[in-house]
Length: 205
Image (cartoon, rainbow, N blue to C red):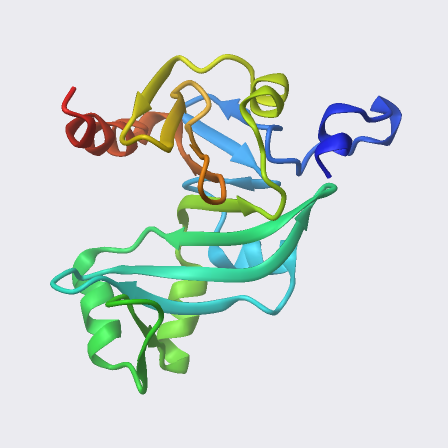
């Protein structure tokens, strides 16, 4: 897969849908994976990637959480990975959905997942997309990342093995992790500071 990322026939590359194919739009929006952050809905994402989307409220202890659509495995162009799509919903709406949940279960450690009632699922699918996270199946080293995404505007290292490469003009926070999987987080460029500020605070900037 890494070989594919570096060596490919340009004629065989799709015009859109790859992780590094990010179109910035007037008004501070961005389009990636054929979805426009802030405009496209979770239903649009399900139409794009198929009916296997799992939708739930995902929350840490003492947090309201987020409504997320999750795919265990998708293919973006020729790049496979996991996809998490966060709905843009008010905290009060999310809290009410969580209260009405017919079943809550632990995902990992203390993170909890609350399933949605059918009526709440319909409302979640109609909500616009606030953020998208993609975890590639293949390990991406720095050389591959810079080849495909270009030089970042800023780097923030949070510990000895995790570094964030920030592309604010594209709305992308790309996490390089020498001990784990890379993580690509996309938001509308106009909302990028919501990603950057916590990283700077964590790193003591």
